[in-house]
Image 1 (cartoon, rainbow, N blue to C red):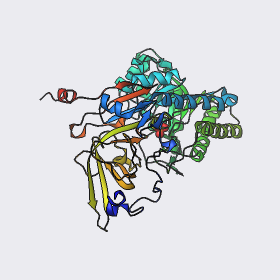
Image 2 (image 1 turned 135 degrees about the horizontal axis):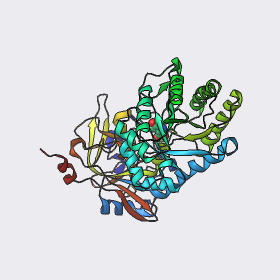
Image 3 (image 1 turned 180 degrees about the vertical axis):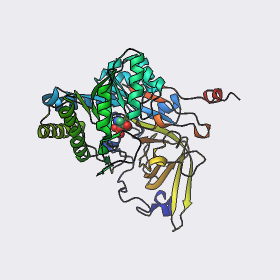
Image 4 (image 1 turned 90 degrees about the vertical axis):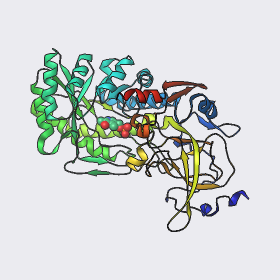
Length: 472
Ligand SMILES: *Cc1c(COP(=O)(O)O)cnc(C)c1O
């Protein structure tokens, strides 16, 4: 009987994207989509670091971001160790800055520091989180294409290790601030090298039509170098390049490194200044679905080290101290979002057939990436296993918007219904950090789990929190 419950929905692969295979067993977890501590327990429910998700849901409610602390620490450590090892012969090692915009709270900032990484921020408040976590200011960077004067003052007063300057106007702004405070501000110049990386490819263009950085073409970046060198209150550490996100190979970095090192060598020739540092940005990809197959940190590190070593040799310059800025690749896979299912609806499609909509108690307010970037995610039944045949399903939220989709396509067991728990993996980066209060929905907590114990590191917002802002 069960095999027929979903009727037309069982038509194999009906409406599914080409990459999504009908699973032999929809209960099976694809390891690269999940943090290392996630498993299916003896009675079929998911566990994280030994803790049953039903217990997390009971104690902390849903939706909740469930963060596997050991997995986060080990991904951070792997990046730090791999890059340091790969660059040790070239320039005595490399520095890894965790890109805090992926997900930041004081607890995570401390983990990052404890595992030997530094931290990138891109607003005054991200910087405030890092300082409140007790991080060494020298190990903090500040990005941003439109930093306010107050943000620059805060950064210079705190004595952070690098301010990544993004425009010609900002050079004078920062120089003035540093001079007023009687300090010398350490500067990296963000250069746009005309390389735009996408998931499986990159495009090299003469110039990039976007708001970030100082263009290499037309001599804007070279002008910025001369300007920084002329200001006694600024110290130029080096050049910075960030080419994109969700990148799966090193070909884009090869072109970017060649171009940015070209300017680095030009600075040495024309100004007789050896810039001590070079930052190649972040953007290393993660697996959101079975389509994605990311490189291990060690392979990325040796690939990038080979590229930098060869380019510097060709240019006849010493290899500067290299840094990189992974965000997603550290935070993304460490976390899944735990939801409770409410309404399940089978909707007739124009061309015939049906689509199953499984609605959960969150949505685009806790994961905007599907709506914003057309991102793909996967999901699984979390509170139990099921032997019901898989049905192609769409996981949607509770918001007043038809684009409120969390997972566009996934095979879920055909008997998923109200009260079931569903987990969406890969939500550690750019989900909580981009969460909104759309429809006056309170943002979910981040619950860190280690050794079978759950601990709230960001609490759930309450209705009182939201109403408190309304002072009318
Ligand atoms: C966003 C960003 C990163 C991190 O990107 P990921 O895709 O999360 O690795 C690093 N550097 C800069 C300058 C960024 O803007």
